[in-house]
Length: 142
Image 1 (cartoon, one colour):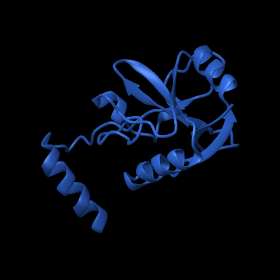
Image 2 (image 1 turned 180 degrees about the vertical axis):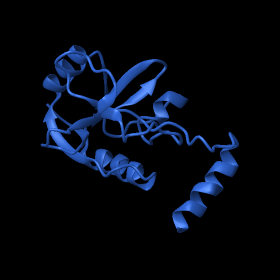
Image 3 (image 1 turned 30 degrees about the vertical axis):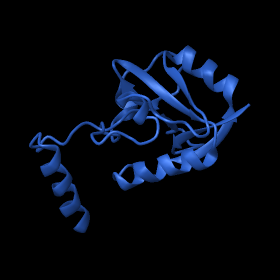
Image 4 (image 1 turned 135 degrees about the vertical axis):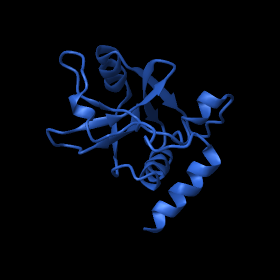
């Protein structure tokens, strides 16, 4: 079975896979439908992430890669409906992300390809989500 994943710098020496940090686990999303993966990629781009490439890969190979790298593969089926706050992150990225500029400098399991995690919150953050949303809107106008 084919699944769709989000890759950054696909095909280069800098290639990395998009992942989420959920309760101390690194989770890689495996989308059943290409459209769902492309929508998620668009949401990341709207948050000023580098634009990921949607790649179709074998589900078994991706699950094996995740196991070997110490990641959790999370399958997102067509028509998926979230049942919890954590499930909602499978359909839309979190509001606060980790920095992607130094993702390759982080320690990686031996033989594993680097993973791109979510961006860290902005150090000038006020902590107020409403104020932060307004600040991001203003920054978007610049």
